Image: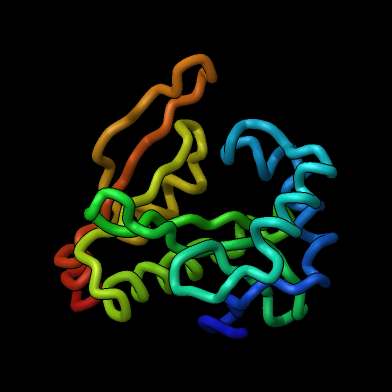
Length: 176
């Protein structure tokens, strides 16, 4: 099922044919460096794909298979995590390294922010990026997110920067 389409990306349900590219992405040390700190072993990536992504019921929230339309290829996963605190959804976007630096994460982020505010009627979208992940922080700032706080992850040596985008700010940026 196709959920959303942008100029260059297609967001759809996961398919069995996505597994090899999913495994390649999640076992890549550079891709996982800012998404938990470690590449997944192949066995973990395979079981997660089959148990948590493949044949999942279609819903608005969650990580959608992200396809680069020009190649018709799975390149990552993007979407919104359902609000757990009543504030707003949490934006997530993970792309395979080969597709970094092309503006695709910005394109995906803008599309899901638009869904959060227009289709879902939320008042706020949250996001986070590990300190040092300059590319992700740049994308969030470019999309209008404002830094709100940082949090050290005990025992992991990681610091996470948290960002928010209020609907009112998003509307002002769009009309400018």
